[in-house]
Length: 165
Image (tube, rainbow, N blue to C red; front, side, top):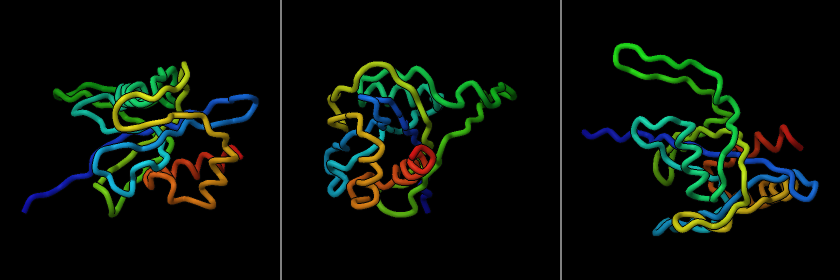
């Protein structure tokens, strides 16, 4: 019997004040052959490459999807880093960890709060229309149309809104 394992992913909650309103960066999910997920709102996120540093992966994914440059990741300077017995290890404390238990494919998503420089612009690939959305509008959409969001980002979004509204 072949075992299938969850895919480790990282996601970025990127807040910014725009026109005196607190906002979060969201984008539209666009991937070939994804069916009902096409067009859903999501956070910048993606898979870790083998042996890729979590923080490097987060910076890479945000840059690839939005054109933004991550300047700070909450918790990056903390944790345990050590090399022993041929292993280089690092502990991290994400803001939120989400696992899907069915649907799509098996993902374990670690979301972090980040700061980023620049203005979002659509990049060719798997996402479209990255933009700053006011927290109140995100909350309203989450309350009335949660199906408009990529399911794996719901937990981190709810947690963030509870703490900031």
